[in-house]
Image 1 (tube, helix red, strand yellow):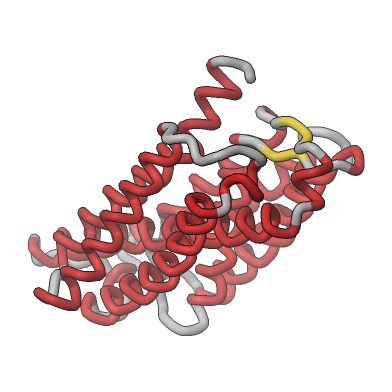
Image 2 (cartoon, rainbow, N blue to C red):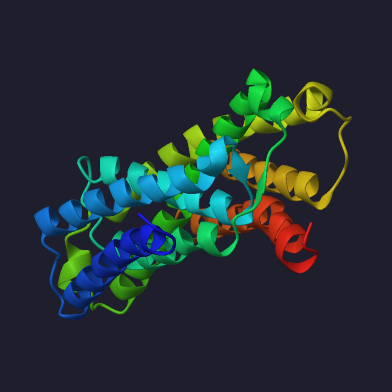
Length: 269
């Protein structure tokens, strides 16, 4: 499948999913679960195929800003797809699907560079990247959860909860799901940080450098750690949890995506 078409197909599927959910919510209705789940399954398969092409084109692993964001959103949407069998989260695709549609196109626009053979054959480096991407994708899903909760809470305060959002689980259930996501993601991020700090020489061939990426990653780790500690010690919830989640996610976004954007897009490295 040539060129841009490979990336347009999943973007179109995600866009259709976003439009379907947005229209239903604007009418005060809940989207049809079978239709949204079917569209999402198609989008995930197409997105996976485009990612495979982008990452392994030419027989070598290519990775960069575009592929990282696209892979993060693919994993986040996959986790949401699995989560949808446990809890009904009708409003989430209206927020997430348009973002995923844009990210589908990024590997075509910003193909990145081939990684050195030494890195791709290093099992420790591959494990570090896999764990980091899983952590980023779970935190992305957690951030989307926080946005959905903020929207539902705002409507509740104005006593006009739409029928679409009324189909959501109670806010307490959503909050418990949010903290489960953050707990697993925090464990993965901890492994990422520890491996980067103590095994930098083996992973990257050089000692630890206190770059913007390192500083923002540790800042995100501290924010999420403080949120989990505050939840256990003082029962933090509601807007406090949402703000910490979004602040930590922004730090993670700046840590990798922001750094790669500056290097690849602005500086052309």
